[in-house]
Image (cartoon, rainbow, N blue to C red; front, side, top):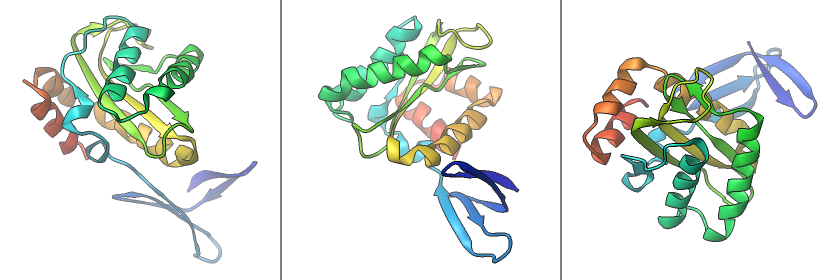
Length: 190
């Protein structure tokens, strides 16, 4: 059983995890209620969306570097840059997205984009990110998500966090020689 929110109600309903998402169905009728697809890193990342060695050494400059990179490769409009940075700052001020073990997953929901955009950044030396374990962050996955896809990507964020929480994977990412190797490792997670 999983809990699912419909408007102001939270309903408990049977669910089935599939390779591509979660399918909810009505317990009494067996009728399909909703399917929430999961996006994978392989679907979201390209070689252009991987920064093998970030320059920033602190929390906010790191996020700015990632957003500026997405603007530079034309994955987000330059006109949306300030709005996105303000939204990310507001989110980070609530609670740092540095989830520990050298990993941060900053994310924001925006009406400025129509499709989810992600970028992966690695820092071999580490970034001071106010992580919950107070350790430097070496891997950042920044997600910019259309507001209309909020439910879908909550599950995607959780899946990414779960997969990157594996110490062996993080060690391989740290040792990867270049963008190609990093991307291959991230795609193997899916």
